[in-house]
Amino acid sequence: MQVDRVVPASGNLMIARQQVWRGPTRAGLPITVWADTDRLHVLTADGARIKSCPSRLSQRDLARLLADGGRPAGPSPLPAVTADLSAVEVDRVVNGCGGISISGRQISVGMPLVGQRVRVRLDGVLLHVIDEQNQLRRTLRCPLPPSACARIRDARPASTIAPPAVSPDVERVVSINGSIQVAGQKIQVGVVHARKLVSVAVDEHTVTVYDNDTPIKAVPRRSTTDLNRTKASHQIVRQRDPAPR
Image (cartoon, rainbow, N blue to C red; front, side):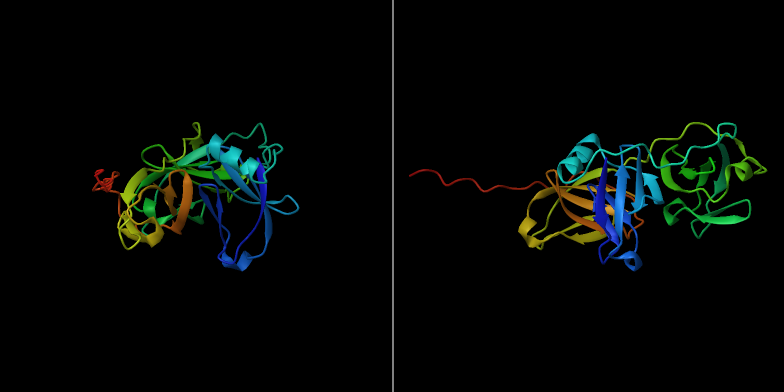
């Protein structure tokens, strides 16, 4: 499906459960978001593709977007890759700045991957970064045309694209001050939610807090600390109704 949006002043949109970052310099820009359960594409108002990334949306998320002003989408906006040019892949170790080098080009793949040996798949259209656990971590625009991909010195024929990294879901009980802590990051969700049991979806870039299935807070992930627990550390104690007299 696809849905029309306008980039807010913060430059950060939420499409169902997924954050789409465009930056405050693009505030007010009308865009169209094309999404399925595999890929999410950001298009300009005239249909030019400006960003592609793995989708974290479920069929349920797509149905909700469709009911909330979305519409059925046409075919994927990705251009077709020339049939006689196959995708290739290379291995790279992510440096201390979160980058790798391919054919003399420096590519940022993210600080959480520092020190990891990643598999990079290039098809002339997209570049996929696959971590040591064989999970898809990032999808970027390929910096090389298909003909140049075929000439990378240490490239080999590519295997299939790995599945996206799973976002761990955790539970927290909101404190009396309206805050929770996840992976070393304190998040203020509001005193109106105090003592509630909430669920939290954590991925590489975003922490999203849900009350049942309703998102109530989404913030950029600023901590690199790993999750050390997924369940709430204590239970909610409900007051009993007074005994009848």
